[in-house]
Image (cartoon, rainbow, N blue to C red):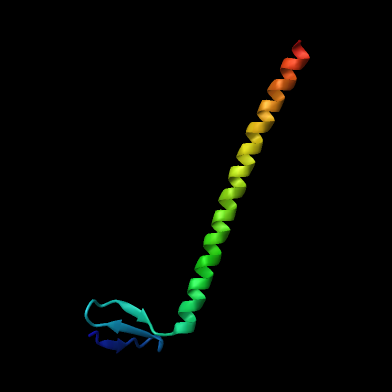
Amino acid sequence: MSEYLKVESDSSLVRDMNNHAIVNNNRSEFNKFLSLSEKKYKEKRELENLKSDVNAMKGDLEEIKSLLKSIVQN
């Protein structure tokens, strides 16, 4: 069973004396953290998807330019 010691700087934090980890006892703060973390993850994935889409469009434009140049030359 873990023993906890309150952290002086923050009343919602405790130190697990078995492994010396700092643990947050405030469930609402933890839920806020999870929500924010999920939001940032979704934003990062959206940005990665947008970058991928832009790169695909660049490739498509290069292909279109190449085809137009070959049509003009013939």
